[in-house]
Image (cartoon, one colour):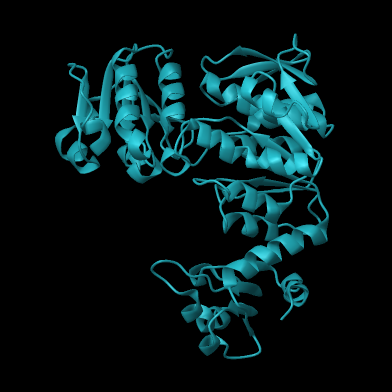
Length: 424
């Protein structure tokens, strides 16, 4: 069956599904495969649960006129998403970067939603499956689409751009993330810049933080819209005011106070303000959107537990974001305890990068530091106020978290550490 025919059937459906546990009525089920599962075996169940069609790629599961046999289910999902994106002809904003992608995407969505009917990546569904699902969630009522793109190897951003065909793009930063796949910070810059390459090749617009010398240099010959402080020559001037306790800034005469902590969040907020400005959202509406946005999903959340204030930033971690979090945390007033979990996907750099963070914690104005995970356990450090645990289980068995009272806590680590368990 041709992709145009599949698209016609898709338009008659209400949604797309890849999980029979979450089947909705009149959806189109894609029988994806993984290392430990074969979605083809669930096609019949998907139809019985309410799906209108099931896309399969193994002939034995092509059991009725409701199953559609294709050469490869994943490729069909990606091709359908790209076809649908072209069919809708709506402007797409893509963003990537080492840190702050999801927070920036949520802020951009909050700002643009003040004027437009937007559709954005849910959570961090930003890979070769998530991007197609995001595009397929858009419809004729969508006025602007916002697509987050993640990668841990070169050529992934390039591939995702060819699916989403963005009209606009923004890279939050270049940091030490996924070094195992990228090899080095130079590899990170090369891989993330694949978005620039696509946008420049198609004469599309790039949003650029003028305070980032690497990004300004890489986009000097591109069609771009820049933001920086009010004294710069940027298209939009945004002044950083302070980050205590929450990040605040100023655009023209309007002051904006967010619910985000850490001066590293200023660039995320500034990008959303600049993009809102580009799309003619009024400054007063931008202020409302930024001030009402509340972080969720273990990202810079402020949580009150008993007598303690907790900064929960346990969704992910890499050397760049960990360093920024520690430098911000030591500015907090009162007694401070940092609980830090291992950073993953660092490859041969893991030992050195964990040692660097441990040394930074040692020399910071933080009263107590608890390191959790095999990498942190092996760092060379000896100080009374620093404790190491090889596993989370060791921490749970040996440390009474309830003894911490009247303090501010930072909880940060990679997703695999699941440090949010400490809250319980």
